[in-house]
Length: 168
Image (cartoon, rainbow, N blue to C red; front, side):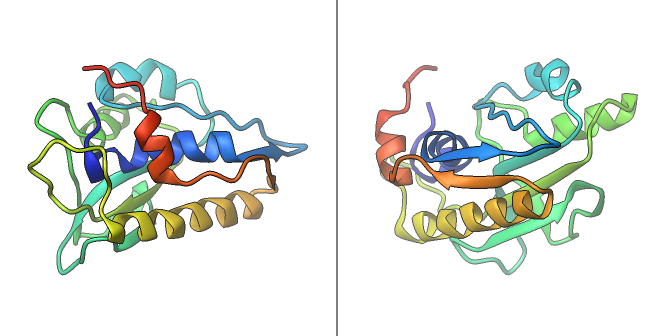
């Protein structure tokens, strides 16, 4: 299950997929909720020409809700990925793909979550606000790649999190 801030990447992916139409003469846009699949995503990810990952990160000196956007080739030294207790971290998965040369060019849009011990679907306010910044960064980056977007449905990340299919 993706509780609280831990699920921000999944919830943001699903929200953007539901919220916008995308169009491009050069690119096809697909969204994949990777959830806790990590290594099982390798054969899927290797089939793409470009990858943008939404995920939780740890950042030395970072505050809850701080957002980072970087190229996987140049992960800042102050950044490490967060993984939950039941998964191999995305960072490890991408590094495994590097070992065999299967990783497409990859951008990371990461956010520092609040570590929440209780089991709740409610995200913290700083991460909700940070997810809005993540969304803007993503849309701006797609625009730089020649991808246009148009609003389809006005929804927010917490409502998406509340509807997430809760499976283990």
